[in-house]
Image 1: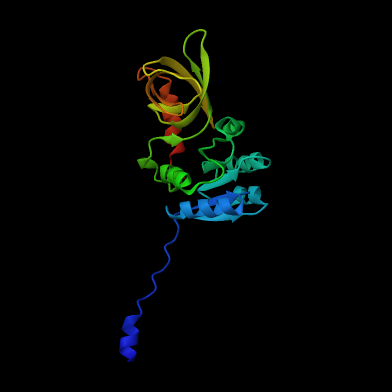
Image 2: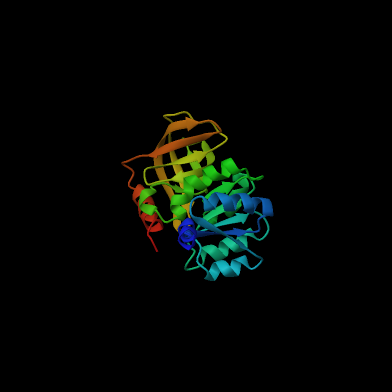
Length: 237
């Protein structure tokens, strides 16, 4: 009997330690429940931060953070980007349009979760960005980041777009203006510690909802500054 009982119980497997942590700041219960489950699927442990989020994010190491956009968000982002341990943290905004997110563009928001949070949409975004959160930098050649981009089409025509992802070879953007494939232009943007750049490029693809891709001109030497910034951004600290 004793032997039979002993073999019937399998040893309890130790809980796998999360590879990274994401701070959830100023989120409602429904949002942090859905987002928490999404991050857990990719071995990222969600941590709900109370009112002293800015202080904790100055001192305590996290790989990512989801921040409700609105009053108080700027102070939290300022604490993150000036923190020695979290300055290159992946920042997700929650709520607001891309235009509203531009208010925080100097802090380098990487992506936006829309409200109300839908599990399928949120999971897709977490899947698309989790390699950055998990520090799988060498496998990730494109950096998701939202910033305002100026598009100079000719001497007189200038448009504005919002970046989606950027690499040393090009970038994906979103704009309310319709640009045809093959359109030559010059893009201008700044990223966190990278001063404003101007790079020639060509629209190479278009998708619904006003997203499109620009391939940078390989002969434009100004690309080197962007490549250097990306290499530094992807360095493992």
